[in-house]
Image (cartoon, rainbow, N blue to C red; front, side, top):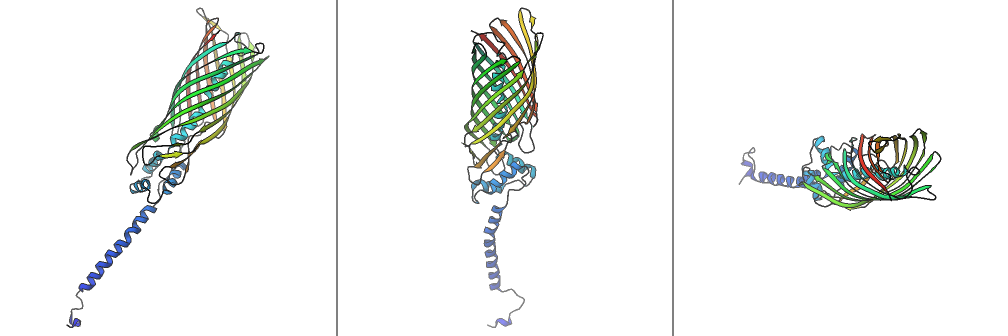
Length: 402
């Protein structure tokens, strides 16, 4: 056969087969390259520093990690949707708990200082007292961490007496409260059961008063995060762990009297130390683990107490009181927590809302002397400060001499 006699423009069967084989080979060679390219794509559209930290942690996951593969397969290109997904994965509620527990350290101080306000003026003898309190607070978002709100209720009580020729009043206090912290924009909630132990002492030299105290709070914390992001099945991720807050505090005041009323400027100092134990979430692929965490915050407060002359309400003597103060915080006010995905990858620092550096405090109350040995009190405390903090609390207390 003379193949040269064939039509030169006609395609040859062998050539077609060769091209077909080459096309298949090229497709097979491109497949792993395409898969590798997809796996190497970064988690884009991270905005805030917390979102960037989460994105880097996700990118550090092993290339064949089920969590990374699932997320990257459907990761949203829209920046707003991607940012919301980072926020839900972040575990921000753990840092939010730290911020709120530092803010709430004032409850033990307030109770001790309230008892010591009568260090020289209370009747002789020992006193047994108890109080019930409820409160609400809110702190707005700062562009990085989301807003949080807190509802709480609890009881506290104690006993105190005069010693050293009635010059010093010393006492012990105990308390229990329950709080719920919500980070709605992160679909996260934490509940805490807190037990408080404290001691206090106060005295007076002429117009000067000195109040001292120390307190320890054990926090039993439970968190729940509802994580629903593209690529993962919706899941509730939760954990339980303990936290601890210890503090020492003091107040120096100078009283000015006219008639039956008293005006007392004062300076308060408090050193607060917080510790949270490590934890491991469970419930889904995006579960986190966190290491132990410490923070130290110093509070300084300048203010004035005012107690009006008593007046009669029927047969009951009533004293009205009020106060105004400015509180400043320094130290580890930028609360952060080191977290890591249990699926692997590198750890990242997650920042919560900053502890309010400057806070205005207003308080007011009435004391009803029901009997020579029994006083019932109603009090209100309101706070407003930096980081858009708003905090309001109401307390009812009873003190009996025995």
